[in-house]
Length: 221
Image (cartoon, rainbow, N blue to C red; front, side, top):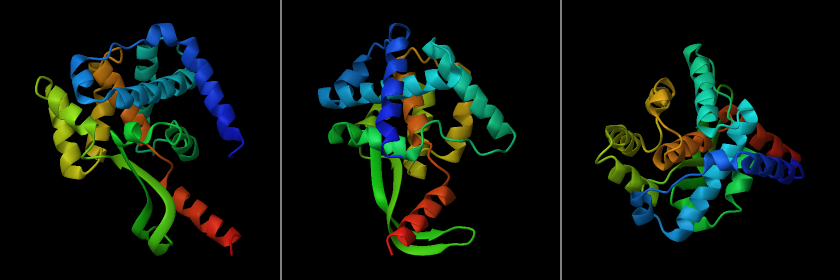
């Protein structure tokens, strides 16, 4: 898997360049005032990375259409009661994020590899180190940005409030976004950034993570 990651990142970079002219974003003034230059550079890298994966998945080079097509597909999964498979596997996602400036990553994300207690269908574990999780950093610049744009955009006011209450993007917010993605314009910085955050937030099924962890522990005994 490790040897495959650089290849996948190169493929995504190719797709990113292929659709670059149609995916150029203008960073809004609120973002410029909220994020540092280093944070913005990292955020733009995240956006380009997710752009490339969405374009590759949908085979659409119109970036706005590609995001809507991908989210519409996920909406249909949700309506059927099926679990959405992540666009970007955890191993690829974390490998990519680890290449970015740490302050840029922390402006949006809280990444941890410790879980106090795990209870799955047939497994009970405590004090687990080695399963990476990712969630919104409630004290990061992105939360400040959500609140600021929420002053003039009711959608983002609601998103910021629910993230603060839930401590992360909640299942309710996930469902709402999928049902209402057509109200978003992914040629706007705030909307494309939220779609990027939404997609990167999705991860491998938790039981799959636990199985990998147990297999790794078994192999090292």
